[in-house]
Length: 113
Image 1 (cartoon, rainbow, N blue to C red):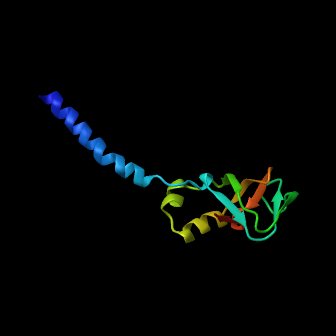
Image 2 (spheres, one colour):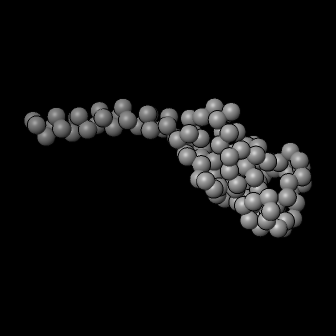
Image 3 (cartoon, rainbow, N blue to C red):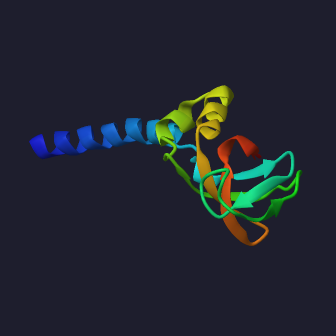
């Protein structure tokens, strides 16, 4: 009888937890694509002084975010408002892939699509 109660309690816990876990899942900043509004230099390093490898033309979309420094905290991104996400990007430099080229841009140049 105790084993049956244990199984029933486990099943109930899973039934309650599954929808909560599904609700908590959202896209991370690295599972999204981005665009730029204006021409943006693609840099070899994470600073304005780094050499330019090319330019991402304004209006380009489908930009893949590979990583940022400092790292974007997933919880803040997932549950943050649009303005929180904007602030998180504005404070970072990010490595991106655009039209087959990889380089660095200031996060403030990126717009989530």
